[in-house]
Image (cartoon, rainbow, N blue to C red):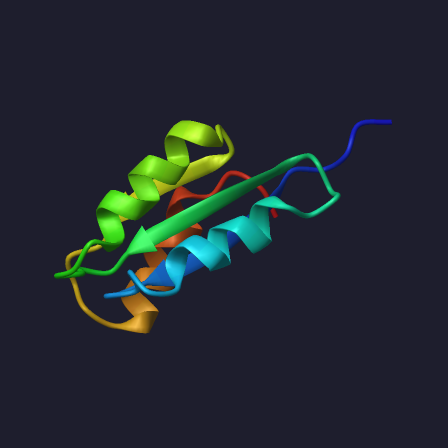
Length: 85
């Protein structure tokens, strides 16, 4: 039986100090059929660069940019971009 696709949404804004640990934690789960949708919520630091570097190593990570600042806008962008539950 195939596992259902699960989407993990991670809104991030100016998260260069924490995003790598967050992505490592999310990617190290034992459930294998997942996608991690990381929404860069208009960061002005290195958040985008870190996400894109991590994405090169993990095909399950998807990058989304949301220019409208705010957690709600970031979450909605992530939900729209996700393919799983």
